[in-house]
Length: 382
Image (cartoon, rainbow, N blue to C red; front, side, top):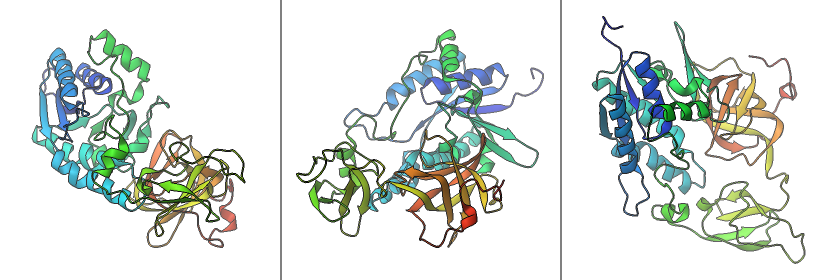
């Protein structure tokens, strides 16, 4: 391409090892590579945010590669499009996953628009995922490193954005990425991966959330209404949670651990059970809304496929059927533990990510599941 104008790619430089290697790989492919560091959260009065250090690391890598590094403040967009959603979900007693919305709204939304103003024809990130560009459609695939695959978090990204995106490390294992970074002398080669919600960092989650959503303490009860203690606020607990409940065994019951089984938001009551396989903790069905299919339109339903109801879960065989009011119903072959409203159910056909939806309700009323949607029915096929 030396005699021709190189195609410009703007890489989202986070200051981590994955985006560092993504930029390096694209430069080797003879792209005109620019880096762009996003500031999505400005508050740092307690020193929990690592943005300053991350920017220094990104600048160091870009300097080593000899590519420009731009910096953009998307904090107002993040607060309006992601953080406000995060608070609304917790106020409603649900458990959100803001990373999914951050990808859709920020990294593949305002970031993409900003990159275009920098002359980008394509953008790239360090996500462990793959895209397959066809003549009339773009497909999202799992990253080859199944332990690091991040397609779950990308299922809500618009296909038009994916069509302009490259995932350079999606074909590599994490160990290979670190090896490349070490060979190139990047300061990020042994940097720990970021975990948790970006704007909370390492700080105490309950203290942070309580600053924005006033806690409403209430009672902890068994399904039979026996009071066992007090909770600090329903928003601080997740379904299936065992630790941090502050209750022991009952005098007339078994000395077994307690698990969060349900939230009765109307009464502000936390329902707990002792058996890890209690019926309130397991379910085969759910209803989901805000459905997004990467192909742009829904596949023919009913659909036989696999799904994840949480990140890192193994693919679970299921059937997807049309529900009411634009919702879909998902019937798993095997009971699923701690399905959680507010989280996402994401659908797969092998390595292909088909799309996903927000879990709205656990369980489908009796009589609404047709018998031919049962386990492994060959009549429901892709």
